[in-house]
Length: 327
Image (tube, rainbow, N blue to C red):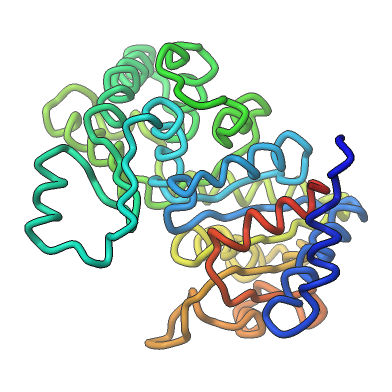
């Protein structure tokens, strides 16, 4: 640690004392207290947090055992690896609000897929991965084996076959850190991702069969077993939710399922909850629901520490992670 360590903590303590800013420090302290008493933390990733290079802080959180399990969209799973292998080909479009339909078509014609102000290079990012992933799918099928989506990524990363393409320091890839530590990842709705679409296309073409990929139902079954085992000795699991959607809604439902559908009433509720979101509670929004609503669904308890930070997660999440890492 250098002499500047702890600067973020001092800055937050000095300036983040009121309103929405104060919740940042409250939530970070709650996270730290949860870990200090032996708890484990799930982090859920929605949106395009991997494209926003959250790996620069999340990877170190994983290495320091401050994250025990991750739930993420298929996009976040693959986009961290895409950034790893094709970073120099990404393009930033700071004037994205001014783009016309013709401008957008021009980006597509260049093979660029835009995510807000960042364009993902289709050829360099997706195609550098496809052949290697198809090889892994076919190999598993040939052996009569089946794996979860994240496990195929772990195989690719741990084999070293992708190292020839690395364009960033792999210490800034949260997927590399996760693969090295073999932490569990839950990827609900993986089909809704580029590689999920590619897998479906290869199934249609007859190259592989769908059963080579384990399903979302199997993810839920695995998560139910994991949650039950980890909490069997009284360990509490916290829930740190970035954004909303399926990445958060899918895993948090494991607790009411265990209670209501399996009758395991001795399984504890989630022991901590924080959500970073700028969503509003319109149209029954899950992403914008306040934490207390989750009490009525059997997810959180009356006394569960609960925090909601109404802000941009690309700003707040690295700040909280940096605070927890004593940067």
